Image (cartoon, rainbow, N blue to C red; front, side, top):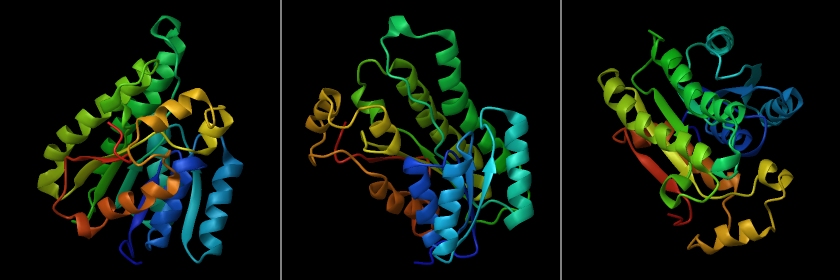
Length: 250
């Protein structure tokens, strides 16, 4: 369980849900982890405490990934704590499901700034590190909705489709430096956010399950091993891929 020993991982949007579990999974694999959050300081500290209690190393760092100055400060703080970041997991995202006619300018920009501009800024900062080793890895968290195209998700799935494309493009740009760039596309999942939104047990959730061949919603625990694999040397010959961890949902 030491696939990422002596490496430092940054997980954006890691105060709860999938991001929190990814942070814990990477710590279990040996990485020192930066738990990024935008507003939920208490949640981020809980994730850090759980990691430290289990014998790992982690700190919580506030920052809005859609703001260049926040990203710059995030990387500076991470470096001061643990050195250069070897693994970047772009998990922070905002999802609003609404008819196209109801999309507002504010909602559009909130989703685009976090879901697409955020990864652009963090990947820029990651690549700007001059002392990266040859095992550097970026994992972007996408969605299986980029293939199934559910109704009422035009902006959210649009941002994730753009993320898939930039994953493949940046993988080619950074390959000469040994930096691998991949994405993971989860299915509809049971998380803190989907429970709070009333999704679990709803007709929409039942419809989503009906589209998943393995017959259930995903959970954060389904994605930790996948992201850990892509971040590790076991995936050293994999870059530019969008891996569907979706129970077969397409």
